[in-house]
Length: 192
Image (tube, rainbow, N blue to C red):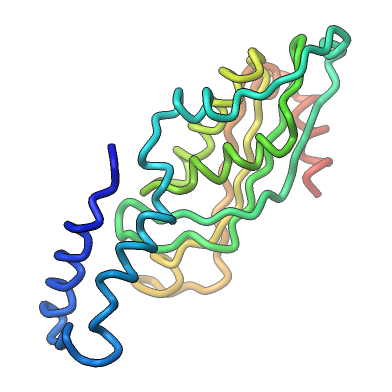
């Protein structure tokens, strides 16, 4: 699915009018175009399914000794996303991804790229973790995946209840990360 920038421009112009402003005034006349360009960038992940993202970043390296049970963790990947309920920014967000290799390892930068692309959708923080875990499992063939996300939501800080400093933390645990308390503790200690 391609992002329809013409429709975005049209609807942003309509929103400006609905807000009682003049979309032709200086300062706003180029806003529909700017918003269309921004949406094309920040929602680029909407153009791809999870399987397509997995194919896009499927760069692994065979490593026969990778079955040692050692955990690989890439932590504090800076990302942002937009809440699908209010199209509100999720900010100061970090994603940490851990996995237990199974015969091969993924290029570390690919983990950050997967997280970034998944976040470039209208999303829920809970689904971001699920999507990343699915993609990581598909690319690495490992069932042992953990995704921990911390973030602030402007739908909580800038509107509604207006509670600044409230952070949402989600954990997505698969395989041994879900069943092995020792591994969970090792993960949580590594995240500190």
